Length: 300
Image: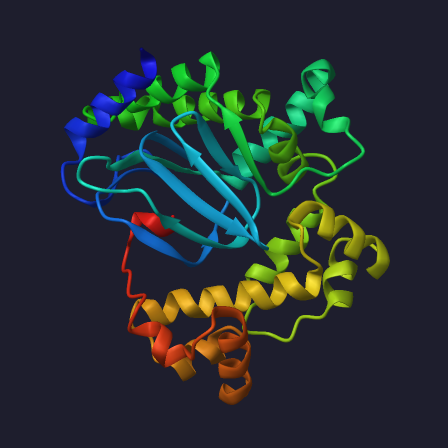
């Protein structure tokens, strides 16, 4: 019943396609009634909880389809392809996007690790969880999200209670099926997430694997092994995907191709075009005419 209440709140709050702010920092509602094929995107650390319809995300060839039965947790920045293959007026995509605040998530992860080791037992697995994880809606997560959305019609309630309700939702996430992935990204042993953050803020610079390894105090070999476990890609593949996906998103919102290429670290526009075509199957200019999507929830 609580999930149906969440859907009703969203239906009352947003009636047209798009994504809208709720007044709680980092929490947005979205609605989409048209099918959009997968296109390059960069998922930032976030929760995407769907109450109607379905979304698709592709990471290094692995396809994630998720709907109202599972929410998606992205615990570190990820270059993906995303779309809404089944959205229609009769089957709209409706849901909630929640940005994960690094400071709060880190505080919670470390506090949980020190105070309640038993809760975190699943994170002790020898295999590093992927940066994208799907979780079934448990009662704690559902109730926490509902309590958060109850605030949005009252600015005073939102201002006073919003941060605490958001913290409650983060806690439910950390205790749920995605907890291992989130704990690895924000808590003890989060070197791969740190290296991705280091890269993501320096896409316009020449960053080597040695730079990333040095930043987190690892050898190149150890970084390579753990990076592939966490993201399914090698560091080199990941760097290239992040740069090309970020450039594609900039181009799709109207930025000049050469400008977008330079902003993600390509000194040669011809090299950028070659690598772009190799990854996406068409030149940047050809691709642009087919993928214009300003503030489209399909790519969130």
